[in-house]
Image 1 (cartoon, rainbow, N blue to C red):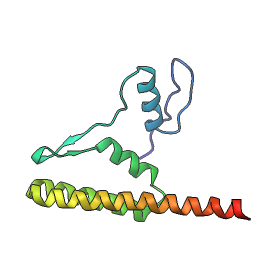
Image 2 (spheres, one colour; image 1 turned 90 degrees about the vertical axis):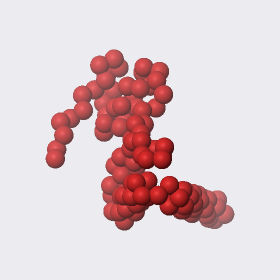
Image 3 (cartoon, rainbow, N blue to C red; image 1 turned 180 degrees about the vertical axis):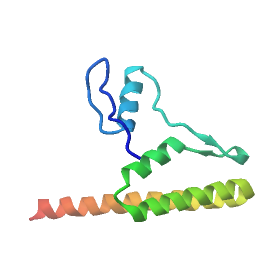
Length: 119
């Protein structure tokens, strides 16, 4: 599905590449907290649906990562519907995996910069 071009900001004329950037700009102009809608799940858990959609959009060129994200989300929904104990265990695993992925990227970036500086 092709969307219409996002109109520029009526106040400052800034153009936007995507709806996420346009929404961030609008929220900043209104001095509101960041827009990140939540889906309330059983047991009081929340799925940050705004962050989820933004992450999928940002990683659209990385299909394997998008597959991980969508499968993790589906599993989270299942766990929330079936058992809070399963949900807690699953979320802990996802958080650990996500933090480890971030650490991997940081180490890789550090080593690239270290090699450049050391050469």
